[in-house]
Image (cartoon, rainbow over all chains, first blue to last red; front, side, top):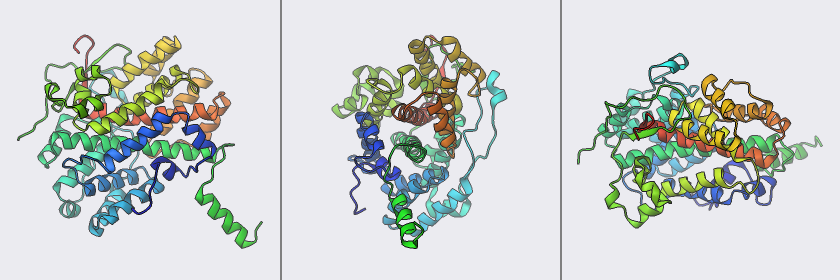
Length: 221
Length: 202
């Protein structure tokens, strides 16, 4: 992307320099700096290993889409598109529509908590898309869905499926970090947006500015 | 190289939420401790973490691990202002209870008890679940954490209002958001890369 974004959470949450939320975030400077470094280590890694940029952005777009967070989804989808694969972008969009559900659900180890077991879908990439995405990326998406919606259903068998599809042990660590980090990033972005919207805290969100400008132009004020 | 998962047929996985000290065993081979490079040590942040199979496994991607750990530390240990440590640990416990991470809940419920001296209330959260009725301030923090944990998120104006009514200012609310959000990161790693083991079998 040609725009240089110095803080991705600020960018996605619409936090402007000097705003109240900017000052609040500055009270946790290490967390702020290292949330950004986590993002860079996952999406612009110095040592990328064997997980490709395409895989990283495809999984990220899928995870953000499953969370139904349009700001975040659009951001990762735009990056996915720049990697030059409209077919994959379209497949991811269709798989998001197939995969959306509500979590967390899943089972506990058999025992007193079994009464709290919640059964939900065991998502599989559609056969058509398995072909266009490839077995490796399809397995990555299926694992991402498990981590997003039913992490307590995780198992060695789920990891074995990744190994069988060509993910190495180290690749699986990177994939797991990527999905888990996004689960954090998306919640910080959505949480801060909610706080800004509910609040005496001042935010200068580009959207608000646009709406306000639109209202002015319409002569309604 | 053929890689495989690790199994622990002898492990008796804990089946209830507890404040006891549990162990954790990995489902994938950790990075070999005798092959750690400078970059791995930087990723581990504290040298003592090289004794943990969990951190050694995550050390396979050391740059992410380093940034993850430093994010974690500032969210939970930077108590120069903002939310009490006990209440940050409460947010971590409620998030872990909601996702179903018995290991994470054990560690952070212990911290919540240590810092709040309210072990009975913390245990009620573990035993009764996230619908527990403790008091308006703890209820608001638990409810905020649980709605932040839902996918899609259910956190909205109502939760912010409850936190404000309970006396939290905006910095404290940011600490709740950060604490719950971070445990949505940590729970997923802990739950999906290995399993807890009973006390004393660490």
